[in-house]
Length: 320
Image (cartoon, rainbow, N blue to C red; front, side, top):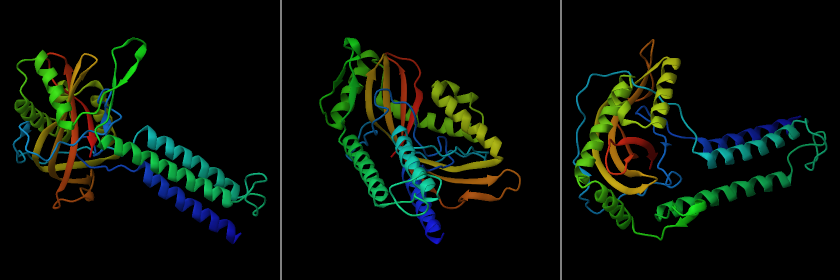
């Protein structure tokens, strides 16, 4: 009996650690909740490329928080890390579940020996370690590839043929994308665009704090509007108030630009800090965050519009 509960405790601990490894995501009070969401077209499955450390002409000047009275602010729920993490978590969870049920005596004859014919054996341990190592190597390889700026673009050739775009430096790729955008819109200006992104950022955060997306509906694509509204609905259901104060945007900079499927895409890096805390809707007690310690963050906001003009709309947010 003691051995059975020892095995149960070990499996429960391993399951908890793996769940944290694959599924944990930060949950902050700002719009988007500190998680990745939305779409970057064909680049949705690659990490945004950080701008170089060299001075860039396409960078908005720092701007301090705009004065505003404290308003209710939504608390998005944590989200998983995408298909890969969900798949990995499911595989490992299923495997652990199978071992757990065998160890508790619910399975038939097994290969582990003991505890009524079930239990965890050497093969279980080795197989679990192997799965974890393969997943680690796969995730590490994907991150290294993204960091090198590799990406796959969709070809216009028939039969949905893909073509792998030759590697370009981050700056060359961005300059080429901006050049294509300017060819179709002679009035496009990078500096004005960064200023516009900063304005959009403040507008969206303001609407978020007021729990009313109506003023910014034209600044969000359909997918982002659905995600934000779902988060606001959960806030009301959970009877909590999230507050965002003293927003200061330190930098807005273009880091990627391209065209595809009749759309312009630009990804910008936003570096900012704020006060972020959550209070109980009834008592007003702080349940998470801090009223005095600011939170710094970097996020990548992607905007899209029809090629040649039109209003830019937020289509995705990615974390560093």
